[in-house]
Amino acid sequence: MNVLTYRLPRGLNIAYPPSSCPKCGQKIKFYDNVPILSWLILGGRCRNCKSPISLMYPLTELAAALLFLACYIKFGLSLEMWHGCAVIFFMLAAALADVFTAVDENFECGIIPDTLNLAGFVTGFALSWALYGTFTFPLYGALTGFLGLFIPSYLFKIIRKKEGMGGGDIKLMAVVGAMLGIKSIFFVIFASAFLGAVFGITLQLVSRQKNIMLPFGPFIAAASIIYLFYSPVFDTLLYSR
Ligand SMILES: [Zn+2]
Image (cartoon, rainbow, N blue to C red; front, top):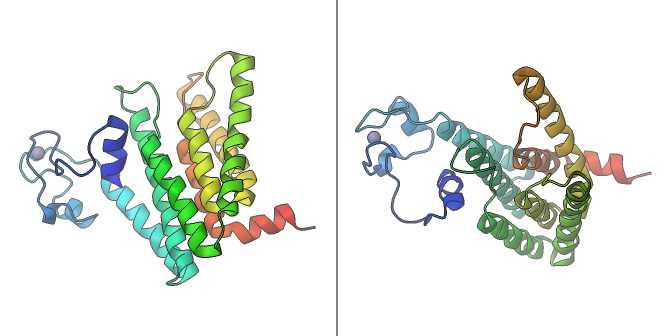
């Protein structure tokens, strides 16, 4: 996942060349590439040149591991568990790609790669077929997700005459719909907007800067993962009478 989030936005091949240290170019041995453990054993430094390795790598690996474990505890060893793991994988990857490109000055803003969104989209349809034997569940979800963000961002563009939301965010919302269905969209849009607003306003107050560009992908991802685990609660609140 770390490889994907680094290489896809930069248009690099995801399989070749094998990982190497960005400082000294030394190829990373398989035993130095074990999630979390290698980073700890190496003390967060390259074996060859001793330049520091970002703490983001083991933290990402830890977050993925804990969320996958939560999926196993919640769904047991079942198709639902694999579905949950797929949701977590694509949401974490999209969020990380968005954040890593947003803080990289070679990019104007955060990017969620189209290839990643497309892969999530197709996976959503495939899993729906495997789980429920239908393509209408992901189709309605994806359409609602797409329009749910496209319409407000289009209106914002006409009124404010500038881009309010990235195309990658809108496509990511279609992926959420394809994976979690139409009912998830209302929750995910409101929850991600709420989380984003709280975070954005806090950041503006703390940094005393205005008009901060904030990647929205991580908030969509967070809201989707919350929905994945607590959908019965939100569905009862939103849709039962
Ligand atoms: Zn090195």
